[in-house]
Amino acid sequence: MKLMDWLNQIKWDADGLVPVIAQERDSGDVVMFAWMNRAALARTVEVGEAVYWSRSRARLWHKGEESGHTQTVHEMRLDCDNDVVLLRITQNGHQPGIACHTGRHSCFYQRLEGSAWVTADAVLKDPDQIYK
Image 1 (tube, rainbow, N blue to C red):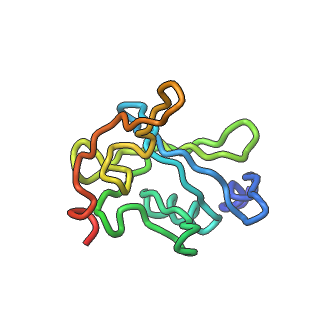
Image 2 (cartoon, rainbow, N blue to C red):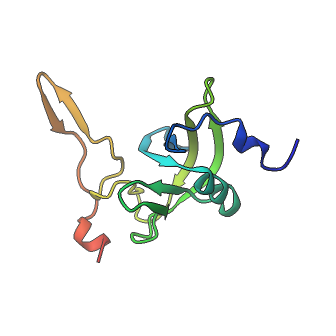
């Protein structure tokens, strides 16, 4: 098997992307969801830190390039359909780790209560202090 054949086993969508879940290795918390293309996934393996494809920026995005809140990748898993990647990571930077651009630990900070989404997790650091 060739060195990069593992990339060919992934079922990329029509835009050449695969959904990626970032889960903290130690806590088990799911901290974010993002997309990767082949280049982002290959770069992630190469540098050992999460590199995503930013659809809004239309470019590779090394997580933490602006905030300093990088993600060290310890393990990468592929689901049974080969169309979702799970990264087991350590969220670096502010402690506890901030993964969300809102200054929260996780991007999944809203919880459905009755018929309304409520904020369930506090801001750990003001985003204006993170992104200058």
